[in-house]
Length: 316
Figure 1: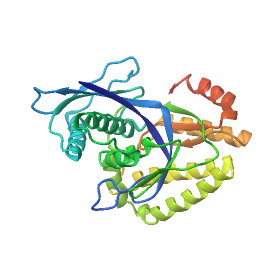
Figure 2 (figure 1 turned 120 degrees about the horizontal axis):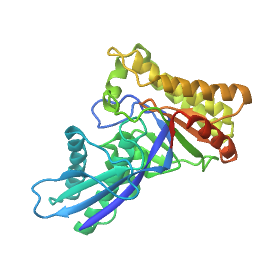
Figure 3 (figure 1 turned 45 degrees about the vertical axis):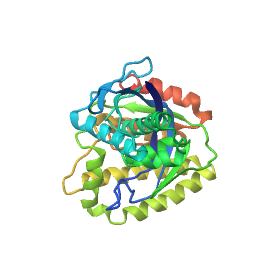
Figure 4 (figure 1 turned 30 degrees about the horizontal axis):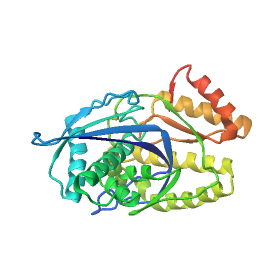
């Protein structure tokens, strides 16, 4: 028997960085994200009666054009999450898990969020069928998924999602459909995982006041978007991702994700804003790659920027 599911990535504009102690993947601050429906992870589960334990394999299909090469540690993390959901359903059978993406993994494009959301959704569907239980609500699946990868909980809703403690919910804002691009500076796996980054940032002197700064920016960003003040939203998200990356560089064991191409793209985009007074909202997750969000009326601008940047970089 086989089951399949897919789930999207999401990009946070107010970042989740730092965790509350004693609770699995409990965010130190509230975050808000935009769901990226075109960037997806795909998961297939196959029940095998003769397997003594679950195992992972790469998925090959026409949609999954980026097939990950998971380390044994990453495979075990994925299998552990499957087992966590099996325990929730009190199910003891074993599966082959197959997964892949339509975008590069492990480089700051939220592949963990998409892949854990897809695994949670697929497993919940499979075990609902196998046990005869009632289907789980999106809220319950999001909370289960959060315990495997924190930001994956936001991928169950959209387009705008707010996450505070264990509360994950869709919020209504005027910009219900934005055009997204990600400038891929590097497809290489990050040397410092997001999980490790969450730990290290709390050693930075700049972490003092971080929760308050993030909350203030969230309030300001919600007001800017609600009032369709696009330029203000751009400025707030620009400050926010630089704040997060400054924490990385000033931790006790400093590290960074930016590459020369990251700064080149940021300078190009900032110059565009300075010259025209308009442009995309810009943000960067824990990686070197640059995310752009455009209003629908900026479609020609988005096309022009993509054509310019694809001279040197991959733009998805």
